[in-house]
Length: 624
Image 1: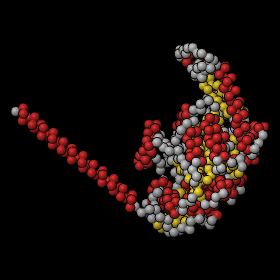
Image 2 (image 1 turned 90 degrees about the vertical axis):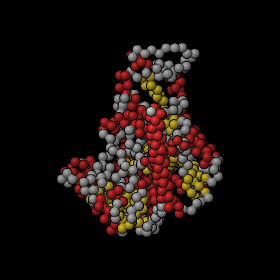
Image 3 (image 1 turned 180 degrees about the vertical axis):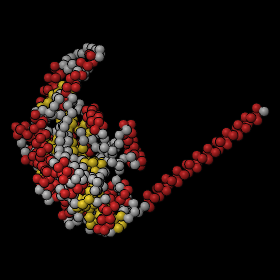
Image 4 (image 1 turned 90 degrees about the horizontal axis):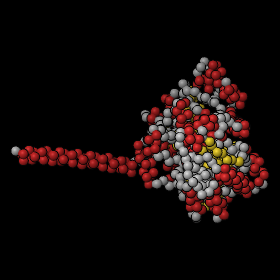
């Protein structure tokens, strides 16, 4: 009886196993067939086409950047933060300039709703490319559901600006407000030791003051007024309105709303800032009427809106598809110009794309220097600075490249200040946008001391040392006077080193550099007047200048970038496949969320600082 029972149980278990095995094999085969179908579809899918008379459609999604930064998908998931899209400026510039001379492209259509900004100089450079497109006799049409200040500045150069009937255009001007922790830290008993040279070197002030210093207030006011004047002039000129009319709209927005009966869209239309109010379907019908109907190609890289790719649409090609076509048609040249990107804070060691690692960028510079095919180097800088050690490491490699006979041209993006300017000093020539932020020639060190809070908690720190500097930089203990004296001497020497580097590079006397240094930030236009910048212009002008210095006319641009590790490449691929890497606009955070997010980012930046001597050339500045 027992034997029959166990025999029955055995037959049941074997049957279950055979059933599970069949299910497993079926599932495996289905997955295999699915993957095979995907591969076949990709291999035999027709490539993108550029129809005659088509519009190049740009729907930039996210923030304009010089180089897409690596965002660790796992950390994003852990932090419950929405990834923000990143749009390389170079891709947009390449597409617009290629389309300008492409007989197949008859119009450019720009939809700005997903654009989140990216620095005034980047917007101005793309705006200039759109103006060149128009100058070739091809119209530019822009539409937004509503316009932020950055979106409108970019779109204001268009032939026609459309906005949704329920939209709004709010031009607020520029502001710079900083959170100061000085009183809070003092109440907590935290002492922050600051060593600096330059009364305008304001980076440490949030940790030592409760308000803005008069020097920083003066410098900030001059900067913002210079940038806003450029914004105001560009918009008024493009829209053919008087600057005073523009000022009235900005400074008395409530009055403009009241005159339009509270209708924000009508207020913008009455002020001459937009041309037409149109719904999505009206916009699409208008484009079909001008361009003819055609199948819309959904381009994931463009963040295409489903509303515009379902049903009948107009003859068009998106950014990703167009670039793949024109790059495939382009003939390869024997000579190359390497464009290296220095974006983000400058840190010691190795860093991934989107950050500036001293060792990483120095290695890239060496590689292009030793590549016989590369005839010139353009360094595109979008950095507020950081580690003094890493900045000098990068500058020296640029200097060695020049000594090897290869021209080096620096091109300043939104910010190339402090350490960003230090590395620019290694170039033969410096180009900047009129609205770039640069200068901030100064140096500082910042060291926190937690001895008093620990004592109040009843935590003691005691021990022995063999000398006055042994354990001197332990944040649990009061700073030794000998250590403070040594650090200040090092800061003074570092500042003189900075001045000497700039003076040698710019052909100036030390006193002349000191007059425009002391940590003060300048616009690109002011820096050109002061002799800190050679020419005003964008990346394309810098590349042309590098080619001229190298004596070449036919060349190919290459963009060497830091290599991701195999794990990072796998994570990025998986992230892209799942569709989590962009496309949707992140929700606007609440005011409280924005405050906490800003504090979190500021703390994360401080934790990443890793200069071996604790000396930093960084400006507390960013482009509006």
